[in-house]
Image (cartoon, rainbow, N blue to C red; front, side, top):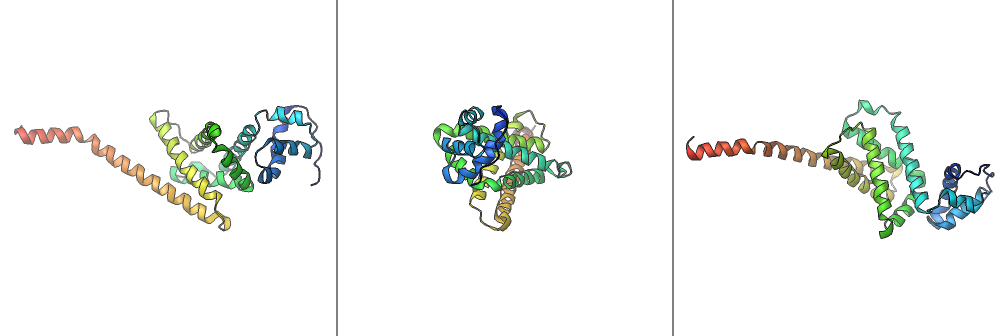
Length: 221
């Protein structure tokens, strides 16, 4: 591989983006490991000690950085689409598709990251990254809830996005058409559940009136 030009900086924070980009070349072969970070540093002609300062908790810091990068790319793309003119259902569908599209060039790295995050000791980070992504999706969709709905919306979307992400990892269809159809089905399922919950709430709200009516019938009031 042709060695890349030396990065002229000694500031670890400024090294994170180029190191991550260089590391992504090696992740499909070597996983998210210290060895991958070492190779990325060598490709950029950066001292490995500086690379470790940029990602002191490698590989978790590198996986976190990739997720943050993809979230930012999704956000930038979403702002160009005029989400304000869409219904909530369309907004969420669009955002899920965008998030997967921006990660498509790194799908094997994402697969490796998932394998690493599934280890018991790494699951807290998995939850953090998932929560961060779905929270950003809802904010981009214009959600301003602060009550119990804030949590139920994010919990529901976490389940939907997780299932879509897993399906996407194995999708070999052209232009991920199967994943797009899967997203539509999952959103439809959620909408049916939400509609059912709304109907149940409407019915239960009437229960006091129903009981009073039954009482009058029973006692002739």
